[in-house]
Amino acid sequence: MQVRPVTDAAFNRYGKIVEGICVKELMQAMENTPLPEDVVYVASVPELEALPIFQTFSQVCYGGMPVQIGYCNGDNHRLNALEYHRDSEFNLACTDLILLIGHQQDIDLKDYTYDTAKVEAFLVPKGTLIEVYATTLHYAPVSAGGRFRCVVALPRGTNEALPFAPTGKGEDGLLTHVNKWLLAHPQAGIPGAHQGLVGENIQL
Image (tube, rainbow, N blue to C red; front, top):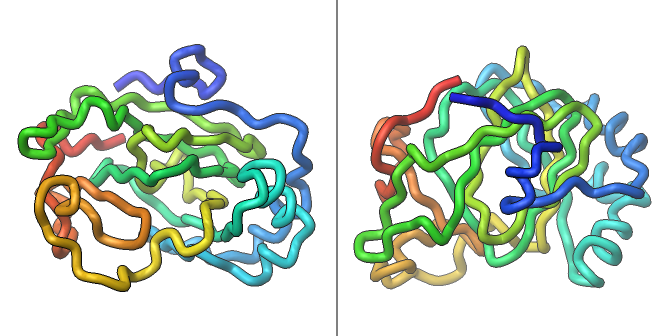
């Protein structure tokens, strides 16, 4: 699979590089977060949210919405799943990392499946802040020469446990957490997830 730089024009359909926001303190704080052999995701980290950039994410990136700052760190080499939210997600690459992404519009609404042959790969260099648009399918980053650290900023409450039981019908069958619709690959073995990815479980 071709891995293109996030500066490639092909990324413009999925998101954009965010300029003009100082990420130095956030990068430094991320050095104190775990770097496991597998993948760990923490939605909200008080130490990260105590930094001045927390207000910047709320005011500049989300227009005053309540937000959360967490991380996704570790070592990963497979696609495994794709998810989407009802809003953009902001990622800061604290190491080089690769994103495997696609378009929500390519989901087959007859059975809510998605062909992984449509997935594209982009290298996000260390220190790059990007916005991933709401209609972009994404999941945990893929390692690019070593374990990765990635900041994840989202509206407050995203990825928390659902306070209600989904109907399981149509798109509702993809809803696994607050503001999180998930399509999993059968090989990933994600309990309770909709087995919506067809084709290769991409490995890099």
